[in-house]
Image (cartoon, rainbow, N blue to C red):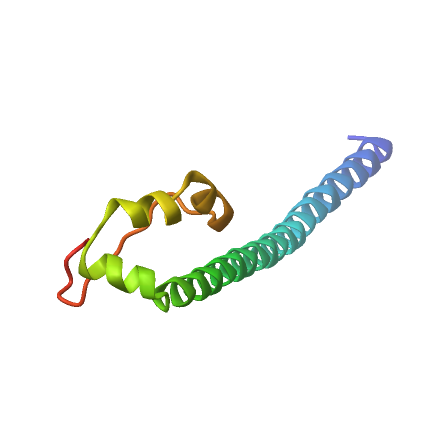
Amino acid sequence: MTLRKKTLLIIAGTFYGVIILLFFISRNILLESYADLERQSTHRDVERVLAAYSQGLANLETTTADWAAWDDTYAFIAEPNEGYIRSNLTDSTFTQLGLNLMLYIDPSGQIT
């Protein structure tokens, strides 16, 4: 084998070795970076979901406290009647409150 071939083989081997080394190093660095970014993104998404849930729950608590204090609602739970339903449980009520369902539960735990 000539000196020229030996030199080319050494240079080519070194070149390929450096390329492979750079590939594995950059791969590990990039994978860690993307994993960190994904964790941060997931954490932010979870925080947004929790904030939205908390806001919805707070709104529901406010509405529930408001409706529970009405004398009409108290009377309806004690003795259900159509007049209360016609005047208070309209489609617009559900739309404005963002509700699909409204349950009235009496002190004994029965749904009215």
